[in-house]
Length: 401
Ligand code: LLP
Image (cartoon, rainbow, N blue to C red; front, side, top):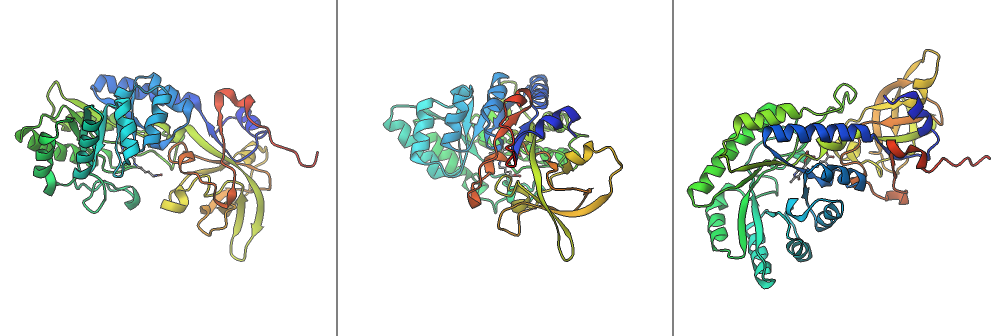
């Protein structure tokens, strides 16, 4: 929960907006940088989770690389301080323009997801007289035990190259003169909470696959295990920093590597989720036939996770927390303004008695929040407000003045 001074300042800012706790961001990133160095693991931040310039600039300043999934992410990451030689680029559907830009920039590696893609990159590199670093994304067929929309490492998923094509793949790589074989890439899913079990399984499978490639004449210098570490959406105050220790320890206990072999990971959510809160206001309180509705000014256009995945985000009434009398509680269906019945923040949530104008906090929204926002219903995009420049934020307009 935010402190009273901060809440008073936030109350003067036009809602909805994403409030970034820059101190927590720095604490998280510094903690991971230190841990990574001690475990000899390289970290690429998965840019897709949050593309806010200030966040990227801080993460790049700590020496992290960037994991991108579109040409624009590559260019943006580069403009935010990530050197080209620390940018990797995955994605099942790279366009010619995106490949061209990556080649010209000289990125660390393309993480290729099909045989045809390797062929195209090799041809483009030939035409432009360049050599491309190519890693291969493998589909290891591992269940990450997470939501089915964010499970990526099963054969039923579109990602990576699967086992039945390994021999053809090795053959193509050997014959492609305009690529350097850089390594193997894996990413099995997101919001993984069974950390030691799932990542140990991933490492064991990776060991077998790396050994197969090396037996067949391809030296695997870089092993990229992807991202996926889950965060605590239920209790962000109890666990503001995700369990990176268990993740790193599980990797080092299970991965087999030579001294000259690099191990990479690509966390997105776990670096940024807890540092943002979507701040919204209660517009109206309405009593329905069977329930009470709290109608907020933030909706699924601002954060689509509840509507798309049924995701849980903790919601707090910040104004009620400041009232000095003992609050009565009530169950509300907290909803947004968008014309869709799935625009629900939480059903039957118990909150202190809430009234029009109350300031509300939707917690843990730093990852896959702003980046997935849309202008559906022609709503404005919620801006970013930073804890260290709070006074510069646009103030709320009093239409009755
Ligand atoms: N590497 C690759 C290749 C990925 O596709 C992803 C995420 C990551 C790394 C980072 O994963 P993370 O550490 O953030 O779990 N919109 C969904 C999540 C989609 C994840 C997509 N890929 C959500 O809001 O839950």
